[in-house]
Length: 387
Image (cartoon, rainbow, N blue to C red):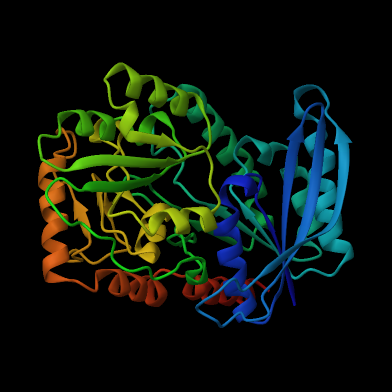
């Protein structure tokens, strides 16, 4: 049995794809990942083989990623080369007897993939994942139009799709047959580090923020919180985010309000590098979206990353990945109020006193509850039912 996972943003979300594939490996699948990379005036289609020799292991680097094959296409007007790119990927799946092609949200690119779905469905099962419910974020008209285009093409292709999985937010209205899921991680990416020292009231509080910065994430709120902090601790924030317009705006804002000296903007970091940085971090910055953007609930994968890393986190969104009384997830109920780091740091200091083994506890929670295995079981069940 073989599965090919197609993720056009593999450079940013590869560890999520590999975590899902590891769960399929638990069920006996040979696992492959595919992506399309835009370089200069070319499109490069790449297919990797992901091997998990110790798929049941909870520790250590349990996979190898090897480029299996690739093809380079010249770009064409209006993105037309993507027709050929998807045809190449789908032909590879068809010709090599794959059982499942699992596609992470294609957004507007589904217009180029959709015409091939009928051909692909005759050869294998198709799973289509929507990691954020469409139309949940009305902040950008261009994004809203892109979402509508995706869903229009999706509806026309739906008869060829075996399972649609959707990471649901509270304002979404899913189709009744969609599989609602939450993102999953691979616990082997994380290490249980010792709790970092905090020796005095003037020690540095190290914070970590993983982000893929977009306007609706409201990441700038942490900068104002650092500016307004009145406590005695020194503050330091490490930002791990792919570069974007919002990322550049954050750098400028940090300089404008006088906090840039407390922040390291690192650009995109692999999860292995984040794991190393987290050893000396105390707190993690979660989703900071405000109600004016309509994002009140999240299943952010970074929250699961933080849990695997053993970092207590705060967020202005509810996250059903964690029980309401989970002690290491601080939900800021007044979602549009200024973020009060004085109170958050007091909360963290209380955790250190009452739960000295909190890092191990968080890691154990992530291992038991935040991996993707349960959803793979349901996906395979639904595929069997459609045959």
